[in-house]
Amino acid sequence: MTAMMEMVFEKMRSPEEKELVEFARPYGGIEEMLKSPELKKKLFEKKKMFEKQKSKAKDEKELPTTYAEFEQELTKDVKTVLEENRRAFDKRFKEVELWLQETKVTIQREGDRVIKELSIGMHAGAHEQIIDPVLRIAYS
Image (cartoon, rainbow, N blue to C red; front, top):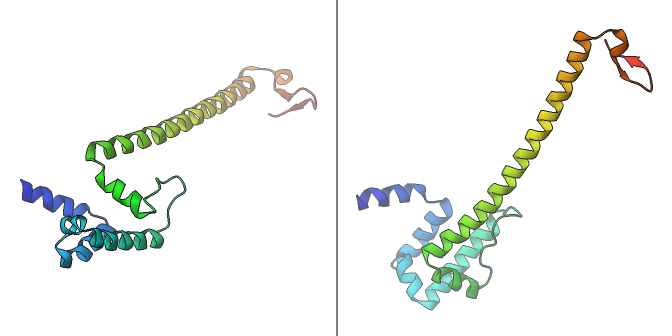
C-alpha cells in the first residue's frame, strides 16, 4: 500500500518539485539537505530560481522571499499548513459564491423583464404595447 501511495504522489508532483528532487539526489535527498544549513541555503536558492521563472497571479499566496521565511515555512507542521490553505480556499469560495448569487439575481431580473414585455404584447391592445411613455413609441 505504501509503495502504491508513493507511486501516486510521484505522478502528482509538479515539474518544479521533480526538478528539486533531482537537484537534491546527489546530496542524499531532500531529507539530508534539510539537515544541513549550507545545503538548505542551496535548496532555497534553487527554489528562488523557480519562483523567478514562473509568473505568479496577484492573488496567489506569497511564497517565502527570504531565507528566514523559508526556514520558518519548513518548520510548520502539516496541520497548520492545511488550516492556512483551508482559510484561503474558504475566502475564495465565498467570493465566487457571492459573484454567482449576484449573477443569478441579474439573470432573474432580465428574465422577468422579458416575460413582462412578452405578456404585455400578447394580451394587450395597441395602447398597452407602448413601452416608452415619454416618446410614445410602441414596439410591436
